[in-house]
Length: 280
Ligand code: DHB
Ligand code: FE
Image (tube, rainbow, N blue to C red; front, top):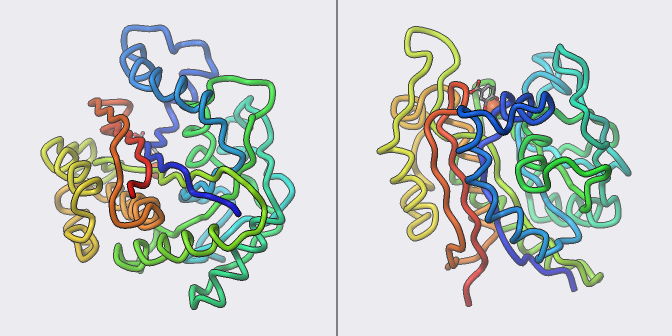
């Protein structure tokens, strides 16, 4: 049977991708950011997951106000790298896992989560930057990826509680797939940041550190946090953090924290990163 072996969360700041792509990773500004992922790069090279269910948000690359699913799952063979205005990032195409993805879609929908099924989609920095942080710059990604896209950009976003429950349903869905696969679940986005308006540049390390602590040890206390509290405390784009609750819901009751990194700032964003595994 398929197994969920670990969970990863990480910010997905587009400037991190640009720094790597333009050979600026070894500069004074970026060195400490990439250093924070060295442990994780070694760890994942040993873990060698077969599939990552990668929870992220599209930033008006594949979707727009014309069509904006709340929860969507990518069932395609492959996903092209989106052009976000400067040409597609020079990273490999993302390979999907249609068999597992279709099983997850079926299981989630019959478990009363009305997923939108995507059979063609370009993926933007929300998905490719996390892959770059953990895998560096390979010729081909050494893992299959099933994108789960969440609307966090336009009101009304799903609640944190609904995200957590989706994670729990995802766990049931993965466990009922009859191939022996090592599956990780990733949640991306966050941490505190606001990109526009009078509070642009807002970063709140106290909120972020508390969120990391509670995500690991007391996720129940985060499930009911209203969007307005994310916005007030962590900025308008800090609400991306609800996607981390999907990862946490997929881990089961208890997790063991394997690694944590927190750094301020990268671009406009507080960078946070966690690696956890389900605990018995
Ligand atoms: C930035 C961060 C994001 O999460 C994003 O989607 C876009 C920009 C930033 O810090 O610049
Ligand atoms: Fe974002």
